Image (cartoon, rainbow, N blue to C red):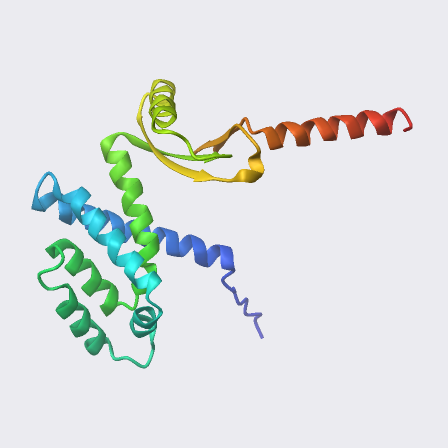
Amino acid sequence: MANVETKHETVLDAGTTRSRLARVYAEALLASAIKLSPDAPDAVGTELTDFAKAVSENPGLGAFLGSPIVAKKVRATALATALEGRASRSLQGLIAVLARNNRLNLLRGIAQAYRALINERSGRVPVKITAAVPLSDEQTTKLTANLKDLLKQDPVLDIRVDPDLLGGLVVQVGDSVVDTSVRTRIQSLRTLLLDKGGSSGI
């Protein structure tokens, strides 16, 4: 009897599949929005982000949309009624397709992928900034200008505060990270001292 190999999807595989699907839906939404008007893509992106946020912050709504005992038709009708007159045709169409295919759990991923597509289309690049203390408007403006000169693109800053850094900044652009934080310097110095101590027999 021939051996039958069963392939189990790992968590990583599932995550990759979800990311790909989210990108596909985001691309379709962007194509639809572009047809509406030149300004529609940004407006649709805001609608999508707000809707995804509302779902994630409302446990009852999330449970209703993800419940296997709620019929597709009932869910689709409820969504269509809720969005009628409150969302663009592009977003209404996306939500209808997601509801029909039981893919509403992809909403957050689609919103993230859509933002990435908008940034690519507009020549913008997301930059994650982690600072020890809140940055002033002047510091933010100067940092934005310096990053624009360095990246040759318009940076979109996502600034977060982490007091544990003690001082300095951590700047992340894609997979590249520049860490100028005091915490990292202290850790590096501690490691250096420990290495020297070990080699000298201390």
